[in-house]
Image 1 (cartoon, one colour):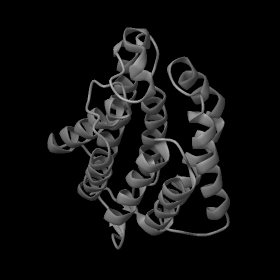
Image 2 (cartoon, one colour; image 1 turned 180 degrees about the vertical axis):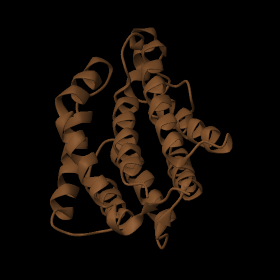
Image 3 (tube, one colour; image 1 turned 60 degrees about the vertical axis):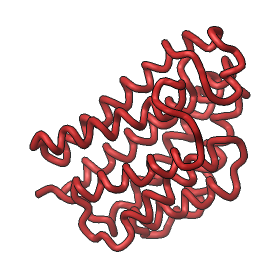
Image 4 (cartoon, one colour; image 1 turned 45 degrees about the vertical axis):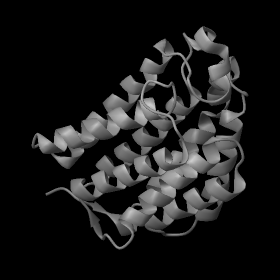
Length: 213
C-alpha cells in the first residue's frame, strides 16, 4: 500500500507557497475583473510569510500546514485568509500524529478542510467560488480510491477534477461576495478563489504523489 511519510513531507508546503507567489499577478488580474483585484497580493503575502517561517526547518507536513493555516487566519485580511486558514489548520489537525499517510487519511484530511470552509461560509457548488474546485476534487479522489485505484492514481484524479472545476467557473454567475453584485456580468471570467484552490490542490497532491513510498 502506498503511503506518504508525514515527517519528511513539509517541503510540499514550501513548494505550494512558491507557486502561489509566482501566480500573484495572475490571481490579482483574474480577481480584478469581477472582484477587488487583491486576491493574488493577499495570497502571496500570506504564503510568503509562511515560507519565511518554514525555511530551514525540517518540519512535518502536519506542522507546516498548521503554520501556514495560522498565518492565513490571523494575519491576512479579506475573505480568503480565514477560509484557507481554516482549511489548512483542519488539514493539519487530521494529519497530526499520523506517521504514514495513506489514501484514507488523505481523504479524511480533505473532508475536514472542506467542512471547515463550509462551516464559515454559505457558498455551495455552482456559486462561482473555490468550492467549485474543491468539492469535485474531493469527490474524484474518493471515487478513484473506492474503485480500487492506487493512492497515486487517486491523487491524479483529484488534480484533474480540480482543474475541470476551476474552468467550470467561467460559465457560472457569481452568487457570493463582491462579484455577486455584477450578476450576469460575472459570466465569462474564472473565479480567483477557484483558481488559487486549483493551484493549492495540485501542488499538495502532486507533492504527495512524488513522495509516495
